[in-house]
Length: 116
Image (tube, rainbow, N blue to C red; front, side, top):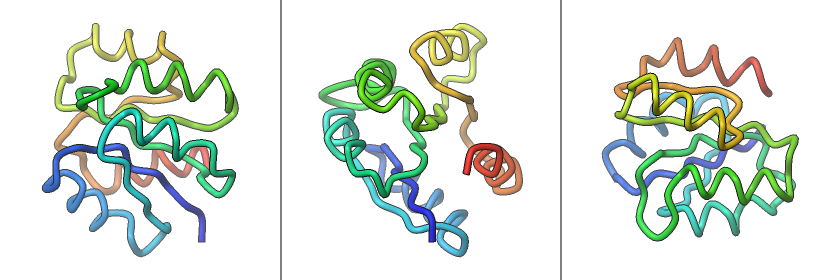
């Protein structure tokens, strides 16, 4: 089963994403951007769902750092901040795609399937 890293500091958002993905993927969690950076070095991680606003290191900076050492690892920004500027900033930081919260399960699975 393919492994997805969910970088999400909010427990209820993490539970929702786990509910959507658990039948299709193995899930691991980072509680902040620094954890996401550390965990991204694991070659078993095949995609990251990255929250934009997290403590310690935000999702944009975490994405930049991860893409520096794993440029081919797909990162999908997942955020409640669904303004166009947030999308542009996420893509500029290196994200491969963008999903707005609350995410619909079919849309989430469709975006993930483009990458893994």
